[in-house]
Length: 291
Ligand code: C2E
Ligand code: MG
Ligand code: MG
Ligand code: MG
Image 1: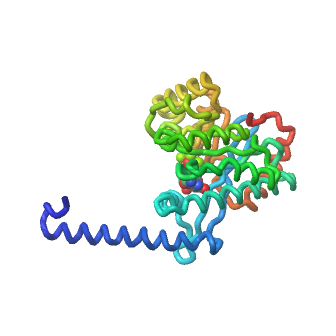
Image 2 (image 1 turned 45 degrees about the vertical axis):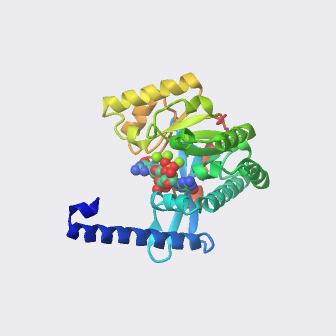
Image 3 (image 1 turned 120 degrees about the horizontal axis):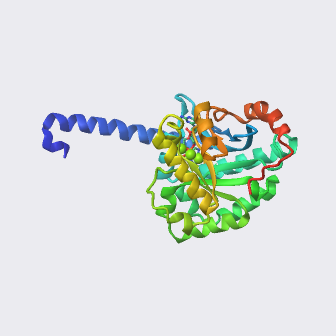
């Protein structure tokens, strides 16, 4: 198509394409080395119960610090990892590392008995029939009960999901893990998957949370999502909560759990523990089990 626009545009198009492809290949090559060279880490973002304002759990978010370029966003490198067949290895590492970390926090009293870790899984990972078995072994090894583990996946993963992914999800659910839909509302809104798969909860995408308290439309959309989830017995978390206005609007429509910069960004484990230890200790009474 570029060729039809004349000789000049063709060259420019090719040059831009070339740079883009080059960049991707560079990142892919670098990413292949990243795991072996300890450039990856896991950051933890609190998932907070609105009322007491204490973390019910944390989402594990992968971080990559490139030796020359510094931090690279997972929004950039996760899609590359998926295309390059690296997501399995990266996902395995993130899952194992975050279970190990939460096991340690449970032992040293940084977190209470109900605190859960939420791990992102991509579509590829759900095609691995060994995932439930491997996860069960890791939970055993690190002393983390299944009710303290959630897996998050986007709607699109379930919409194009094959038989294998479905079985894997049922097995994860059978183990007792939470199964959460990430970025809810941004995929195809073919809600049938909520019935077909053993989903236990949803995370409302930030795009619907942004306008809460100031946009009647967003208020109504979130209200509708909450009532749908109530009817289906699903838990609800609001993502990307940045302001008190948003938090108060969430409380008004009956959302009880949130995640966002209002409570804190994803931080390295030492910082997470330092910041949240005392508040967790206060919550150790553990009145609010995730199940
Ligand atoms: P996500 O799973 O929806 O994670 C939430 C993203 O929103 C995170 O971006 C988080 O840092 C950011 N966020 C949290 N609170 C706020 C807020 O109040 N305001 C704003 N503007 N942003 C907020 P992050 O860490 O850059 O991750 C981006 C995406 O990369 C994740 O979106 C997830 O889809 C993917 N990802 C991250 N770690 C992993 C992983 O270990 N495995 C897989 N498969 N995907 C991952
Ligand atoms: Mg997520
Ligand atoms: Mg999300
Ligand atoms: Mg999101």
